[in-house]
Length: 238
Image 1 (cartoon, rainbow, N blue to C red):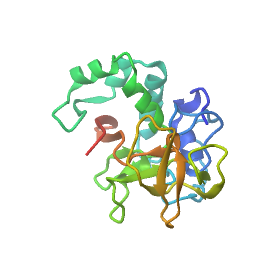
Image 2 (cartoon, one colour; image 1 turned 90 degrees about the vertical axis):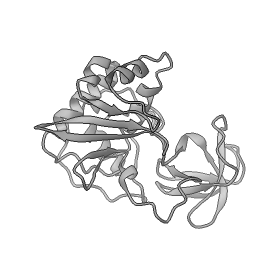
Image 3 (cartoon, rainbow, N blue to C red; image 1 turned 30 degrees about the horizontal axis):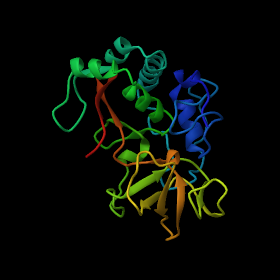
Image 4 (cartoon, rainbow, N blue to C red; image 1 turned 135 degrees about the horizontal axis):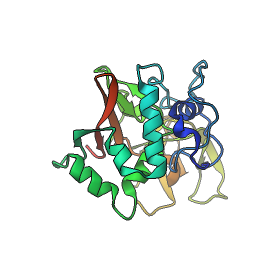
């Protein structure tokens, strides 16, 4: 579920597709942004296909389109200077005191491209307009999860994801899960292809790990700054 990033030069188009609950053809939520057509199309918001199905609450905010055009171009080209131009000098980067442009630049230069890959993954997961006026990605990071144990929860980041009887692509399908929270039953193994989970309805089975995202995975917060926007935090964990 991932296509080459081209028109997330128009983030909203991808967000609109994600809001439909159907990822564009090509790589999906765990890959880079998928291809979409048209620049910020004006269209009705499709009905979400799950509790955490991405919504786009940012497209109509003043100057948000210009920010996302510049943001996507920077991410696509892996242009650290361009991305830093969109970033607050005191950007928060972790919960251990990591902050600032210098640290941000160092992490962007890491050979494994971890931060760039994390930015890629966010681009089809929606955008929330927080109560304080900030824009937050992914959309579900700004939603209440009081009824969920976020320490053991994962978000299913696609529609109609198979819940399998065993950790195998040929195992019988027990159910389908769309954009909902599930509970990890045997903990999280970063090297596992499948993870054992329990759905909100109580069914137990296995889901491919690349369709699951922790609520504590990278979140991006973008704050208004004059007549534009700036990235003020990009953190994971809690």
